[in-house]
Amino acid sequence: MPVEESLPYETASWGRRVLALLVDWFASILVVSLFVPVFGTTGGPGSFYTLLVFVVESAVLTATVGGSFGKMVTRLRVVRVETGGRVDLLRSFARAILVALVIPPLIFRPDRRGLHDLAAGTATVPLLTPDRA
Image (cartoon, rainbow, N blue to C red; front, side, top):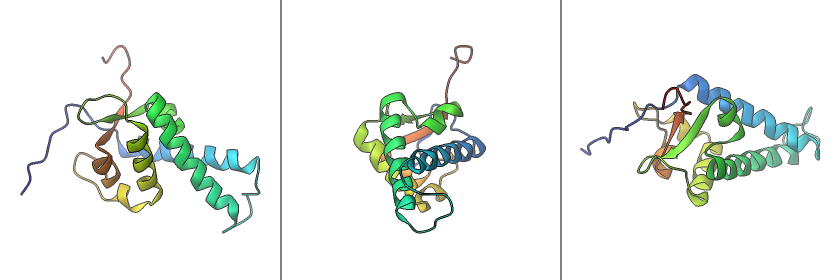
């Protein structure tokens, strides 16, 4: 049986992760609704575009600033487990696509890292403030 690696830092709570996801999803809906009808429709192109905006926003912001819009609002960031640094764009897109598939984040380890984090070699952690660093 493989030995579980222990993380040198605390991972984020479920409450903050869910809140970050809701903020990202609502922001994606708002962006898409500027161009395509989203509210009051089901199964139309707006749903696909919302998912696409969510994946792109999450991946690009995670790779460039350390977390999606929702993660930044809730004071979280995504780091590489190996280095504690930023996630590259390819890993970030892979992680975002796995989150969009819904199931990978629901299967997780005791350290709260889901399959999407394990596949990308990442962890979601609280954003350190100067008084905690």
